[in-house]
Length: 312
Image (cartoon, rainbow, N blue to C red; front, side, top):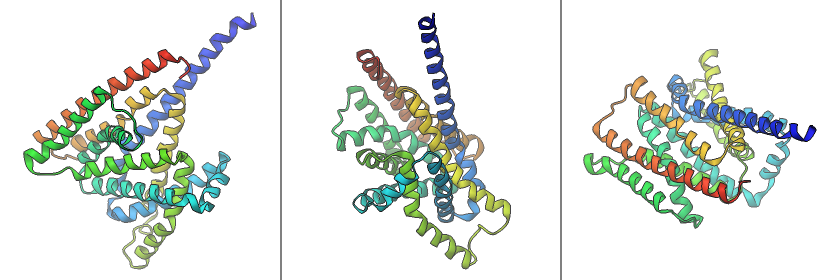
């Protein structure tokens, strides 16, 4: 009797874990998707001050969370390992560049280009994996990359403009992910170490701005609260994503990652009123086609791998 009752219990547990994973991943991507609204709300502070506040308050958020998970000692150990610091400094520079470009793009009313960058990012990851990790590009992945390249070429050929912001966002984040993977950097510990390394410079920026009368942190308590919220807007979606990714298969997470740039795309056109031209239509149509091919191929490969080994 007891043996016959265990399989349903195990199935129910797996179902519950999947539900938790879906909710967590959706929450993370949803916050990332809505983040342009937040950064628009604090735009009077300017990109540099917002970035500095974001770094400081993310560290403030991550310290108790990392301590509660029993990993604060691990993060402090990493900070004392001089031989590993160059890798963390590189990842820190890359994530700082990505954050600054993201904030600047939103404040400069270029949210469409920002969303395009994060649509392109998965394809950039495939390309970087081929170049630096010796991963093989399948035929259909090659088709997806070619479609994406054609999409990037549309504004260059048709209008003489180069989508540098989209490509800079995609490649800075893609290279950041590559460095983290090569160095086996844990996402949670890595974020705390990176923000800890950045905090002295961030605090210096805040102090200089406040003492020169150009800072915005002490304008009023409501705006100060909004700037403090930048830590939540950075750390919480990452933590939710991490918890979701642990409980979901790769193909599910791969498809869900398009939620954030899709929300940003809709915000750009429907809420912020950015112009959506024929050039944009052609570019996004090619990118969406590339992602459809890429997602189909990823799901197909995952199912083949799962059929070969049911425990993957």
